[in-house]
Length: 116
Image (cartoon, rainbow, N blue to C red; front, side):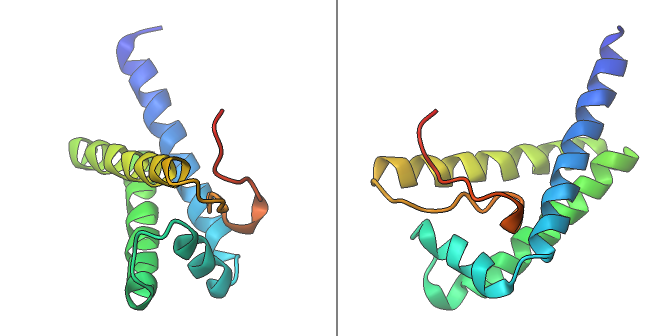
């Protein structure tokens, strides 16, 4: 398999994951999604709706761009930033001993943030 084909497969896979997460989260009640953001205890309560909207819009846009292969350098950098943001939020929750829902894929999963 060529490296270009492998890169395309990875790009499409990440795009599908981001879009699936966005769709699943849109099917989840807003109050539950805000509760999941609140569980990380990073964002002040009054800013949580804005953060939720920005994350959802970014996730859907980046997933779509990765899927169609448009603006690849920007989309790949944004996807990396989103995944690092999530990893950082989970890490700080673990370090602080917080027990919270991951928030990944909305209400389709009920996985808690925990060590592997």
